[in-house]
Image 1 (spheres, rainbow, N blue to C red):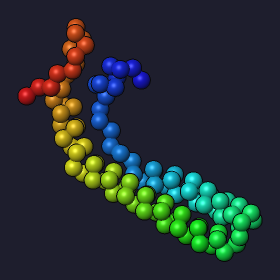
Image 2: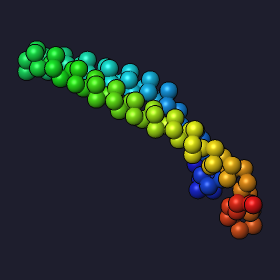
Image 3: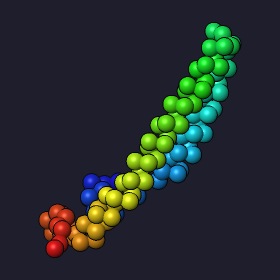
Length: 100
C-alpha cells in the first residue's frame, strides 16, 4: 500500500473475534505439542503442571486483547471515522486537510 493510500484510507475497526479464534487455535496446538514434548523428554507430571499454566496465560492474553479491541471500536473508532469523513485530499499538493 502506498504512503498516500495509507494517509487517505478509511480507519478500520479491529477484529477481535477473528484474532481470538486464530490465537486460540494456534495456541491450543502449540500447548498440546509442547506438553507432549515436555512429557516425553522431561517428566509427565511437569507437563500436567505447565500445560494449564500456559493455557491460562493464553486465555488471559486473548481476553485482554479482545476487550481492548472492543473498547477501541466502541470509544475511539467513531471519532476517527468522523474525522475521516470531514477530511479531504488535495490532489495538487498531496496533503490531507480536515474540514470544519
